[in-house]
Length: 181
Image (tube, rainbow, N blue to C red; front, side):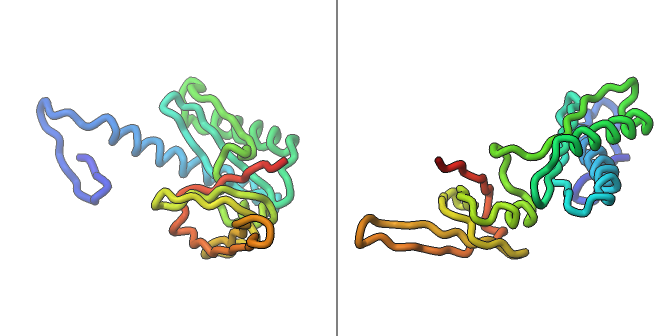
């Protein structure tokens, strides 16, 4: 008996094959949730540290992204990696140690995902890609639980004008911090 995302229970008989993605997605989602719970427990001792995302590749390469409100010390990431690795080994989630673990802070190539990341980056330049594909580049001036405020300049000389736009999170596909020199 299999339970699908739509809640239906279906019996597979004879030579019917079960779609591969069912097992892959079901297993990955469960593993991600279990790892997220373990990471959250590790982070309880450091309220300024927070989990951004957990990813698991089909090769059992586990990537955990942890950030902090004011910079993430490398020593903390190493400590989290060691503790989480030990927990995963002891849990038996991956028999025969068939996994690899990477714990890092999200780099500049990773999009912002949590409101705390947006707050941390207020004052920096960002590129926002909206769900409809349009792009906004400008200075992130504010972040709330509902969205962000981006400011940019248009025109040159006397016609130069500062524009501001409030963008709701529900309309944002990705936001990346831009390095300006």
